Every structure is written in C-alpha cells, then in structure tokens.
Image (tube, rainbow, N blue to C red; front, side, top):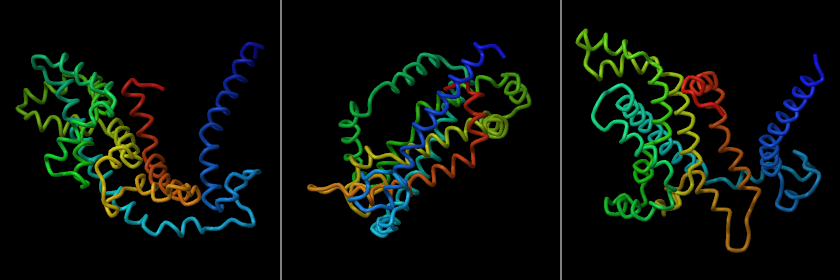
Length: 272
C-alpha cells in the first residue's frame, strides 16, 4: 500500500468518525438530559446516569399518549395520501405522453423552491374558509402532496422500459391496470424511500401544527413539547424525555425498511 493511499484511507476514516460523532453526540445529550433534573442537565461530565438521575421527567408526560395518538393519525393519513398522489403524478409525468407534460413538471418542481412562509397566509385563508381550522383534516390537506416524492418516484419510473407498458396496452390492459399491477410492484424500493421521508417529516412536523391547531386536545407530539415552555422558564428535562420517545418510531421504521431505503435511493439516481 502506497503512502498516498494510506493518507487517503486515514482521511476517509477521520471524516467518517467526525460525521458519526456529529450525529450521535446530540442523541447522547438528549438521552442523558431526559434522566436528569434541571440543575444537572448542563453539568459536566456528560454521563448517562448520576445519583440524582431517575425517570421523573417521563412521569410529567401524562398528556403525551394523546399527543402521540394525534401524531399517529396525522402521520398515517398524510403518508398514505402522499404515496398515492406522488406515485400517480410521477407515472403521468414519466410514462404518459400528453401536451405540456415537461413544462408542467418544471413548474411543479419550481414550487419546491418556494418557502412555506411565503404561502402560509393564503393557505391559511383557504383552510379557514373551508372550515377546517383547528382540525387534523387541515394538517392532512396541506400535507397531501410532495414535490420531492413525485420527483424521486419519477426518476425511478424513468428507468423502467416503456416496452413493458406498450406490451400491456397491446394486450388491452387499462392504464390503471398497468399502473397498479405492473408498475407499482416494481416500485417497492422507491415507495419505501418516500414512505420513510414522508413519515419522518410529518412525525416531526411543527410549523403547520402551530398554525392550524389551537385546541390542547388536538396537539401533535412536536407541538405538545411547547407545554414545557413557559413565560419564565424552559423545562428541558421533560422536553428531552418527550424528544427521546419521539425518536423511537422513526428509528424502528428506518431499521425495518433500511434495505429498501438504500436500494430506492440508488435506483432513483439520487446519491448523497
């Protein structure tokens, strides 16, 4: 092994270790803080358990089963609807030929560049005029579409040979039959990828919930964490305990679909 290759491998390992530490240290800090009282949270050394540690922060999360249930409902419906809208629109943009298709797709992609803060006022007026303010249906409606998911699935559909669809059309198959029975079974990996992205986004979604939810009993998990922010003090211990709980479902989903997630990213041509 040459000295150049040794240096390259050493630098690669150092970068990998730094990146891993950058990701894991905040998680470790959340775990340690969730078992400590407010006085010890910022005390050094940063150990997981001290003589004053306990599960007292978790006992203050008495309303969080309701918040978790609300998050499950919103996340489930938003994710399922997004998978449906993203897959059908991606199929239309990639496998159906119609006038203005490419131009409309460019405009659709450009909408991804518009910050949510720019459109929040007209969006809020629409939701309010529909009578959906202070309801979970408002969160589901504004989260029904994903430009990124459409783009990701379209990139995968572009890799499928058109001859498969043409053969089915010659045999008399309806376009919905081709989509549901031929295309979708081949798209498990990219659908799993979009599922993970959508689930993570809506599970952690805070801004829309803050805008459209006013009743305490309708709060989702991220919005429920504001219960520990008062005018005079922020209670970090219960907040970190709630954050630790909120991480678990996302980690379980990712570990369950990890194989499909990696394959989906690779097959769609997007590499980080």
